Length: 388
Image 1 (cartoon, helix red, strand yellow):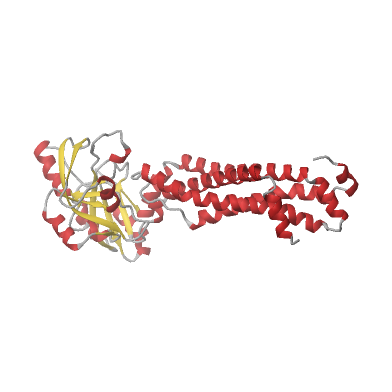
Image 2: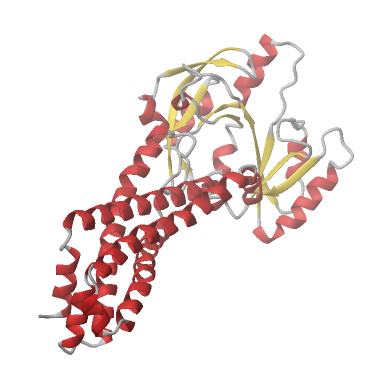
């Protein structure tokens, strides 16, 4: 009988135990994959940042606005090829306690914003309609699908940062250039925000929340950042200019403790896989100690016995790993559906699949090491006397 046939027979000898072990490993691998995917989604904004874009914001905090005249002065800095600006709008849509009703809403300069963000692909006719109508907005494809929005619909909100009732006509739906682009955002005309606030709250200033700069060549970014910030260093609104990657990273760092905790948990899960599998293999080897002694008597070498034990551990580990990876995909999809705007870009990366399977196989090897060594070292007479 070939060795692999003996290994497979040993695996299914106790079918319930084998099935429970595979299920336990699969659950752990699935949890490992989910956590790794969440950590990756948290860093999606950093990974998707453009290499030639910079953000200029208030040096103290993003909540403080920047004067509009800054735009022309920033545009004159050598290396800056285009400038746009945006404001965070906020607002409440429907039930404020429902996560599905929250999504990023920005007032943007309609003439320049989408030129600086080519990854937001808007049909030309829809972009033209957006520019013509003051209360027009453009929303992402996933946001439209989630709420059933379509071209021509009116989205009504209650303002919080900017109080009052606001109505936005959907004139465009953008799609992402690739899977790393967030398709759950909403953009409307900054001019609409400016005019409405002047009517509703006379005297309240409406400035730019931050400026978006396109820089060429990209290696001019340090020089551009220094020039812009030095220009406004002694003004009433000093600035901080940084690459889009650094800007996104600053938000991720606010949650660094959570991310670190998730990474630690993912390592603990590998330990759980090891313990689950080790328990099964140790029990199986202990029950078969007399059988292994008989095999030695018949002429099987220590390498054969190691192959039986390690092979069984690897088969169980691999089966659990494959099942766990397969379960990861529907679980991630369900997680993304439950929190679409908190994790707008969430995909199971190939590296996560490889790490999940690798962790399971590593646990299989580690779990088999001690019992295999014990079987090889156990004398035949002692083995024959052992009652499993």
